[in-house]
Length: 362
Ligand code: SF4
Ligand code: SF4
Image 1 (tube, rainbow, N blue to C red):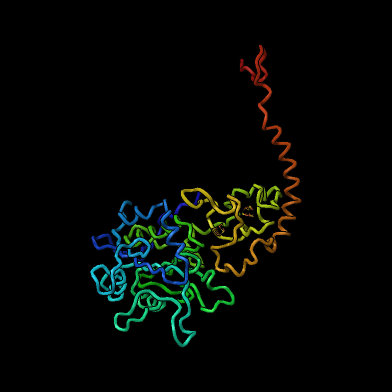
Image 2 (image 1 turned 60 degrees about the horizontal axis):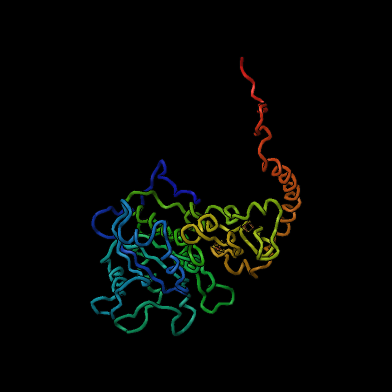
């Protein structure tokens, strides 16, 4: 189980509250950073709550929202037409749909490192017919947003596109806007990493922000990497189904084993992620639980600091040797205990004699 989201503290801070009148809170979703759209796809599997529950107002006290998300939006007309998807983003820039939450998916390439062309864009500028770059949209919209949310490891910390040797100078949203950046409502950038995100982690974070906007929740608690603390406070190892094997010094050397995967490359002991606890969809799955090593996809140092994948992580040799020696002793003692507790107590028997140790008080 995840820790429950924190209850309102004794001194509730309700920055960002915009009330619950009939005005919807718009969600402007830019999925045009460098990404595979995997976070959008993953989110369709959210259950706690589901996207339908958020978008259709199925949760009590949740403000009305209007979602402008390329993955599900049916508005697909040309610029200037009756059903122009991109028009909502121009409205956001003009201040016509205040308040809105800006969601950014994908890493932000550095458009300043070249003389011509562009790395990625989102819609065209009606005046020039040229694409509007993703970073220009962030420049236009972030100052007007109630909150900026980076979804997925690309948008939060740069991810795969920001690997050593990449040509785009890609970075995460906090690198682009500044780690101390705050929205006009005083909310820091909210980062929900994952490659892709665990769907419920994002749905829950968005829901939290909407309750905060309605004045029903205190300031979202974030750690120093701008992650919601209640979701990213524990390591993969702390929630892994195989942690008992680690503690007993039993390590898999191939993938067909139920034992701990650290010797074949699992980084779980040092990675902040709740996926083994939460599962992937509806509580099912969760990398090491189902046989996949943790490759640390939620971490700011991903992927460079965790490569090559499938090698024993540094430090694992020492810790598994210690755990192996200590775990071997513990295992022997446990085997003896298991033999004892795996049998019924001897006083459960037929016959005329009571051997339970009962002593009548008279
Ligand atoms: S498989 Fe990974 S996360 Fe699970 S117990 Fe082993 S090292 Fe820890
Ligand atoms: S368990 Fe590891 S590989 Fe799996 S989602 Fe979490 S950080 Fe990524």
